[in-house]
Length: 217
Image 1 (tube, one colour):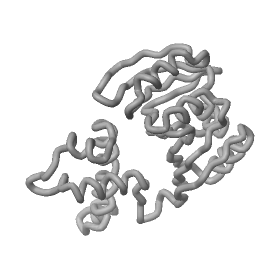
Image 2 (cartoon, rainbow, N blue to C red; image 1 turned 135 degrees about the vertical axis):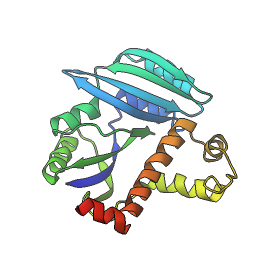
Image 3 (cartoon, rainbow, N blue to C red; image 1 turned 120 degrees about the vertical axis):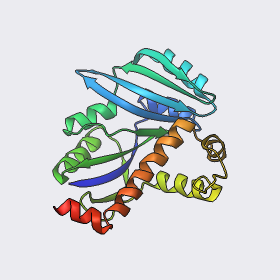
Image 4 (cartoon, rainbow, N blue to C red; image 1 turned 90 degrees about the vertical axis):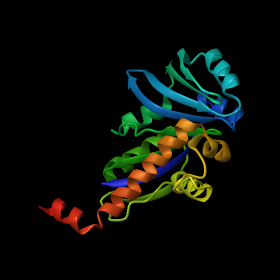
């Protein structure tokens, strides 16, 4: 089983690529999604200075069949939408792979992590080529390796949290203050840090003698 991080250039003709390219400071973060026949439904978090404009652009897009805002923060909004052009969902489905949230999209580029057998990754590459989508590989390694890597974004935010004193006792800054410092929605920051903490703690625990004894028992 392999774990890969991919950054995919979406075709300019795709509506979500056009909107994200027009608003490069807005982060599109897909938290959940599924496809049915020729349509797809997704739970999307938008964060950045242009969320209102992005919502208006999505509402005006013919390929967006429905759009329902669910939750609003100072600089972020959570929406559910349905589209008849879920290109990445179709690509993953044709390769026999599920979407592993979160999928992040900025400036017409989608970033996601895929965990799959090598044969499935090869099928995904073929599907990306078939849809005319170029991609870069951020990392590729066996998911069973003893060393489990943090994503570049997790590393960036974890370092920022440490430097800001978020993990000091007592804390030197709150989650809200840290989110403002790194210009990220608080909910996004919280989940990213939690994932990084989970990885670091589990990696540390595997080196504890008592943990190893229980695992092998």
